Image (cartoon, rainbow, N blue to C red; front, side):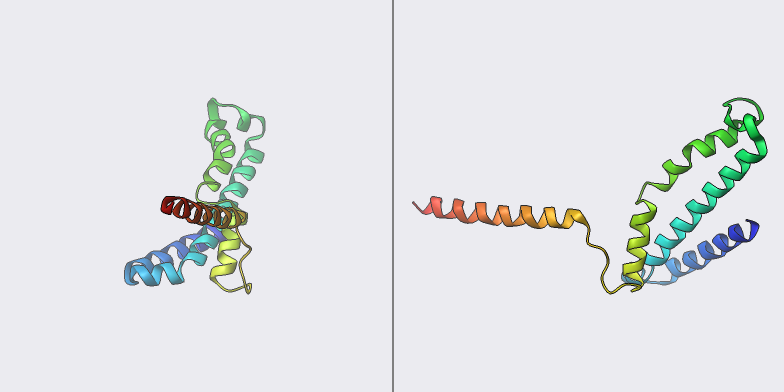
Length: 134
């Protein structure tokens, strides 16, 4: 796991360099997929480390006091750290679309709802505009 942590640190250093040298437009266009993959990789690494630490501490890893206190907290909160900004599935979908691993990213179900609401709004505007003329 040490190599995974070193790889993540190198990845963070690389992306930090890119963020300081690219324009905002270039960052938005080129780095989104890489940052999404970094987030997935980092959260999976933290989950693995928390699980292994719990194995080492045994029953003490489940207590909120004593030597296992920090292990218990990390193990309990690791999923809460992974979810903000998008779950792993959402991040992988974003990366696949950004890096063109797929021809077209999986559509977001919310897009259909937004489209339906926009069409409904246009219909209301037209019917309201027709009534205003009378």
